[in-house]
Image (cartoon, rainbow, N blue to C red; front, side, top):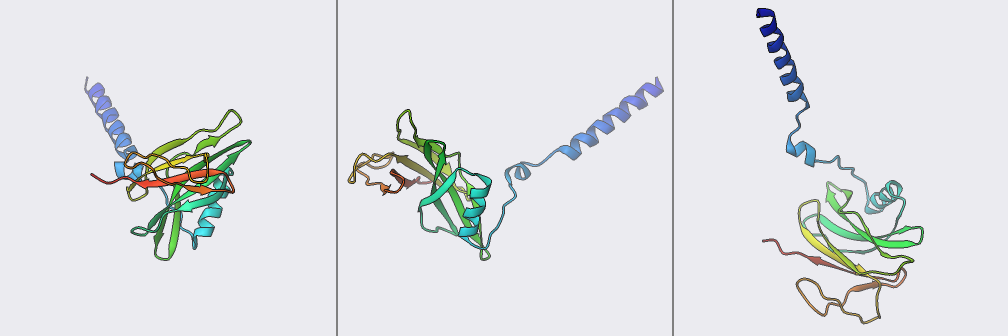
Length: 168
């Protein structure tokens, strides 16, 4: 009986130590390794290497607290889409982090308009509206306004509008 108790106690201690060593805190899980670059151009070029379908930056916000959002195009076979990334400045370096998966707006089966909400690296919320323009003076409706004139990228035949979402 004594041997069985010692064996069970030993197993319990081994299991506890293994679980304790493998446990990660929530902050460890949420923190990604951030890569820093000497310029926005180098950060963008590296993003293009990591994801071959990224084509061009077609728009960007202004810097707000060392952070800005860029809107980029993707092209995969005959599909064209858009995505967003956050560029952060710190100590004369910049980082590039994509916000969500990009979405397709032009494809052989037909074009579509779409929008999605996302958070930047620092937690600021935005919504991106994008699609194929219906004309040079087109208007769109967002969740917080009507009759918005989106930006139109003539080269890619894409409209886009980046709307900040007020924090509660």
